[in-house]
Image 1 (cartoon, one colour):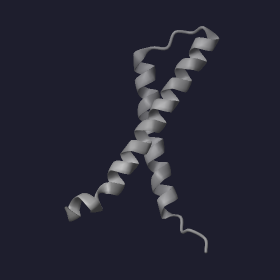
Image 2 (cartoon, helix red, strand yellow):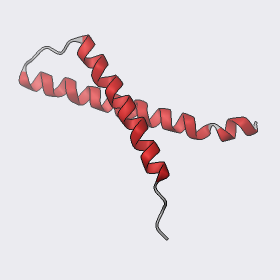
Image 3 (cartoon, one colour):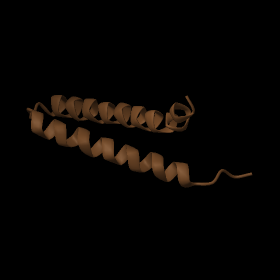
Image 4 (cartoon, rainbow, N blue to C red):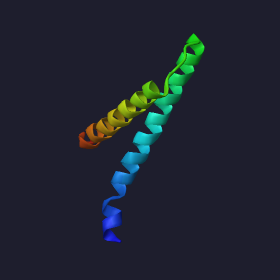
Length: 69
């Protein structure tokens, strides 16, 4: 049970990254729809992967920043 508690930050980080990737993919799809341009599945997958990695890096950087007193 202790190991699950210690790994809870990992599940939270993955959840945040997945939500951020989904939001970025939805925004890209809406932008392409507004411009009336077809968005391919490969391009959407690349956008999702880049957003996922970016969100993970952002969470790591935020976690390293000390909180002010």
